[in-house]
Length: 298
Image (cartoon, rainbow, N blue to C red; front, side, top):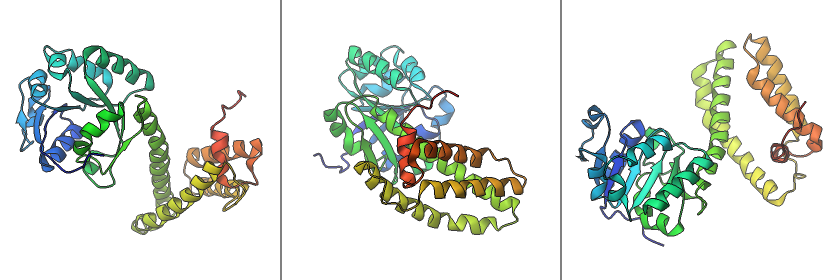
């Protein structure tokens, strides 16, 4: 396995928005030789330590690894169709860091293979401010040998640069799993903050306790993992029907404060569906089985 020690490699970053800027800065801080290109030149002025290329092809010409940071793969493809870009990338590593669906990354892989480009798909699971941090997660998918070839550079961007396998849609699927946690977690925090505010509680006190709440969730996640791997939900830490009763109380309390009930009502509906499937007396981890089944139309 290659060492993750910095070796000062020539790299390019195409697309200097908020994420592209964070990526370029992290690469510079790690000692790499960074060339940047962006359609809008004013974004490049604040990037110290980078060489600015006049064209996308120029940026890629001397780079061993090119990172593309556009809003989607269609925009990425448009840039790669500019004169000389494919020729400059041929035989080199391209790390495409754009939102996409599985079908889109498969289409892009076919384009990259036909063009002689070594394509690694990447999906970023952090905000720009977290890029380069030890707990930052970025998912990667593509040829295993390619990942390890560029892994020392990837570590400059994310302490948890995570290889999801050779199937090119692996990073996409990992990102969707992350989004399940991210959206549910952030909405839960914001709902809790709104509940505190509407109930006249101390908002600062609420936010000071969130690390403690997350510790409890992390402890539960470890028991979830064991049960899901074993396929056995009988070692009950908290029964699903007990959690459903709590969700019903939350829905009633939310209505009592005058707030909308969309969030707790969704929790109640999800839990009731899992109970109806026969999981009520099992640990709430059994909801993973309910989520894994398509719901019959009403």
